[in-house]
Every structure is written in structure tokens, then in C-alpha cells.
Amino acid sequence: MSKYAFFRDKSILITGGTGSLGKTIAKILLTEAQPQKVIVFSRDEWKQAEMKADPLFSNPTMRYFLGDVRDYNRMLRAFHEVDYIIHTAALKQVPAAEYDPSEFVKTNVDGATNVINASIDCRVEAVIALSTDKAVNPINLYGATKLCSDKLFVASNSYVGRIGKPRLSVVRYGNVIQSRGSIIPYWTSLIAAGAKSLPITDLRMTRFWITLDHAARFVLQCLENAVGGEIFIPKIPSMRIVDLAEALSPGIEHHVIGIRPGEKLHEVMVVPENAGNTLDCGDYYTIVPGTRAHDKIYIQKVQGEQHQWVPEGFCFASNTNEKWLNAEDIRKLIKL
View 1 (cartoon, rainbow, N blue to C red):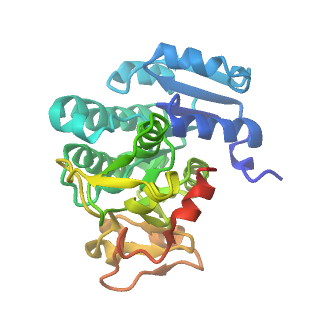
View 2 (view 1 turned 120 degrees about the vertical axis):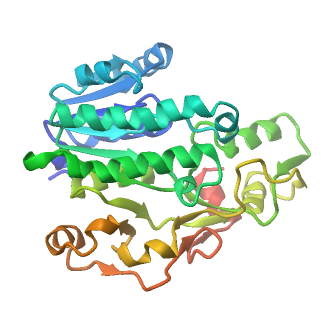
């Protein structure tokens, strides 16, 4: 039986489905899950046209739906007879959020509210929303909007009523290697243009990293296992920013440009304040809602036999992580 038999003959809609993660999820579903439909919901007709040009994504199973998460009525139409929703649509660039905060609120907060309400009204089975480590103790507007989104999805499980669906949960992780807009394509372009030195914000900076394939498969795993209200966090490695530069161009010099507004030196995905309601689930952590941490029936559904509460004061941070990628590890991951 296929690892993704759970999605067989089901309809799965991906908001922001033309993005790097959305396309990777669609590819896995098409090649390994035998779904009834995979629906891309996004606002850019040109990116949809480019995606359709790929023979894989011109598959009869694929559907393309133009729309914006800011438009509740359009989502009501798109979510009709959909079983599962993967919500990846968001505005993400930190500097842009600082300059145009109201636009980020409209997409990342109001859009999240629309996804929640439309999925409840259409009686979708389950929804998984994508978050970021920047939502934890946010210091920039982008992270603040994603924190709001996380809170909305977790709390919305109280609104589903006796029918008990949809189940709404969140996946949180760090930087995705080679995703659109990440530092790797930027630095690669500088190196290709003959740069002798790479700009680095701070030599001490660390980040969590995950591959696109790992991220996509983790999202599908969590969508299948979700009870509702959890925040799922994969146990992914950290990397020093200077090691990334070394991986891309061994021996290259670098010049420090300073941390940008809204940027942290290190990132965190589980803070000590959440330790009391965080489960160690083997290869990932699960933060359960604080309001339900003492709900025995709920915890029995979430916990499983192998899951244990993390110790008091536990913190999952990029600079104190147990797992690290060195320059050679990075080169293998990005296939240099």
C-alpha cells in the first residue's frame, strides 16, 4: 500500500500552489497518492500557465483556480467538495512587510481568517496551515502576522461544532533550502557574476534549514495525523551562515553588512514558555493548545504511546540545536 494511501481518491486544494512548496506537494500527490483532484488556488495566472506547461502538472487530475485568499466568496467556490486544504499562500518578504504592513495583514491575517471560515462553511475534512520560526517571539511584521495566523488556526477548532470538522492545525519550520527568494539563489547569482566576496549580516548568525522534499512530506504527514489545534515542528538541523557561504564557494571572502531591520541573530521554534504543552514525538515536536493541555481525551488522541512531554524549560533554538549541518553537508543537500 502507498505511503500516501490516505489521500487516495481525495480532493486536495493548495493555496499558493504555484510556489516552491506547493509544487513539490502537488508532485508527491500526483506521483505517489492517486488523488481524485489536486487543486492549485493562486492569484497569478502567468505562474499557473507556467506550471501547466510542465507535463506532470498538465495531468487530468490537476485543477487550476484563480483567486486570492483575501476574497472570501471566491474561496467558498474553490473549497466546494474539497476534502483537504494545505494553506501555503502568504506574503513573506521581511523588508517588504516593514514597508507595507497593511498589505501583509490583509493576506496573512485576513486571508487566514477567510480560509478558516470558508473551510468550516464548506465542511472540509482538515486544513493544515504553513507557519515559520519567525512567528515565535516575533520582532518583525511578517512574523507577527504569522503568529496571528497560527493563533487563528489553533483557536478555530472551537468553532467547528458537533460535526467535528474541519480539523485545523499548523506546521512550523525554518528556512527552506533553495526555495524562491531564499539566500542561496541570491548568493549563487553573485558568485556566477564573479563576486569575490559575499555579504553576510552577522558572522554569528544561525538558522534552521529543511529541504523542500522534507518540508512537503512533513506537511502531508501532519495533515494525515492531525487531531486539530496542534502546531507540528520537525526536528531539523541548524546551520551557521558562514558555513553556507563556504559550501557555495570554498574559501570565498565575506563582508559584514549588519543585521537588517526585523532580523534576528538566531531563531526559535519552541520557547520555554511552551514546554509545558509540548510533546516529543520522535522526529518532531507537537505543541498542543495550552487550553487543552489538561484535556485527557484530547491528549489521548494527540499523544500516542511513544510521545513524551519535553522537560521543563525546554527550548528548541537554532543556536543550541543538537543537529548541525557543516559546509560539506550543505553541499550534498544542494547538490553542488
